[in-house]
Image 1 (cartoon, rainbow, N blue to C red):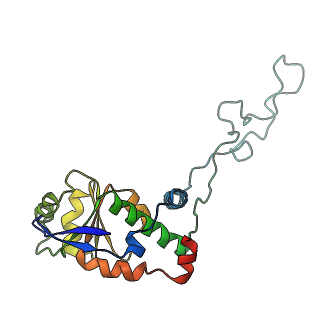
Image 2: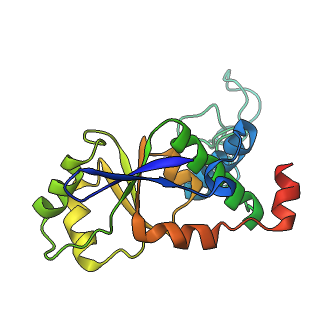
Image 3: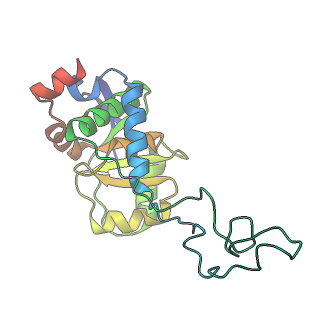
Length: 218
């Protein structure tokens, strides 16, 4: 796959050929759906909880005698049909965590990198070095690239303190991740992908295809 390399001023420098084992993987929608559900599930806290009639405080005494009052019989004021009573079939705390193997995580990331490249939504950028932690310095770089007004993921070799602070005010549109930590889910959440030229080698080392993974892709 060939991808354009841009300078920090937004000028096209050259076309770079990327490793087809990482950026030329065929689409796999079922895998992406599995991974998306797993990552989004892992973000859920699962702390919502309702009380059943046995958990609501009080209600131990029978409200009135069984017969002779003319009222409907009642055994507890915490019955689900009473105001202040328990909840039937309400949600309870649960763990939504789904464990994904390293093989699956890496394959999903390769599929997403290939997908963004195929959509022409992937570009390379020469190494980002900011002298100051000012937003306008980073914004000038972002505005010069063909990703303006798009939700963009920047993958860098190292997220320096200056880069973190400079991009903080642009979090609605821009997310910064290092080559060691970004995931397929991060790529899914953003329309455009900008990879720091210095991060390409780290990504290739991280996603190097093993014999086991080749058999998994087949």
